[in-house]
Length: 89
Length: 214
Image 1 (spheres, rainbow over the protein chains, first blue to last red):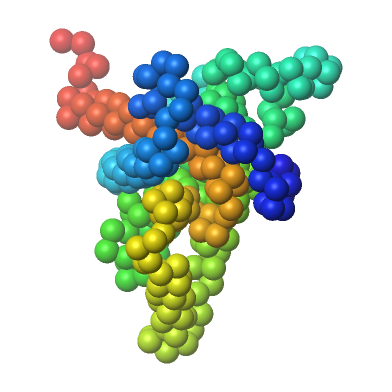
Image 2 (cartoon, rainbow over the protein chains, first blue to last red):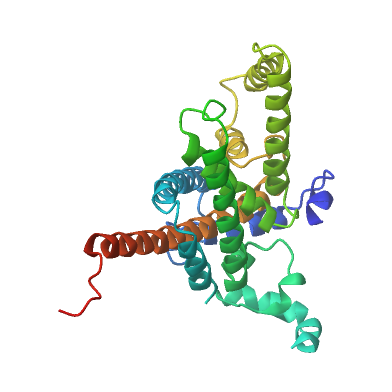
């Protein structure tokens, strides 16, 4: 993997910049700003952290919701089959 | 379809970077690219795994004793099952996925060992000691550059990436974010579908025999 190569001391700056730009493209907020060539790395990391935290929170909320829904469909096994077919299509 | 996917595997990977919903069968050739989490196939794979995991949680919580479960039994179990399904979907190619699966196994083993030994589990105290050591080891020096501090925070957020060098950390974080987004999409879809099913089933039960012609 390329990670082994870069951790060997000679961390090429280009690789870091490429990774940073890839990360930046994933973040929702920075996709708004067109042509933002040099977003500060610190700001980028901060946005990344907050985005991951918000995603974690969303997953927690969703799992709360799913656990509530699970209790309602306890004796509803045909419902699970329907859902699986819905998800597959 | 197999021949085209094998010959254009490299091009397919490039194309997948531009296109979002690929759904190609070349997923086997795809590496740990963050874009692979956007393919429809991954979404389907994860959704079925998620459903299986949730079914297991439901079966476990109904049969097992409530004493073993924590305060928030089911939502935390659902969250962990979803994370585990996500890690399995990563097919072991990323560090965070391996860390999720490894930590879960360790935690299960520790819990089992704690139950076999005295109620005062020495394993948990050991975990606390190592956790405290890890948090105090970096030292809150005022001279720590803000970049390094942020990188440390990021390393704590992504599972298993605390001691990773910077470029590897960035790569793991990109893949982790893409995977989390897919997890959110899949769980949302599942929640919507479940709520639709449950609401429709409750309405039919309350009406009860509405199919009889007036």
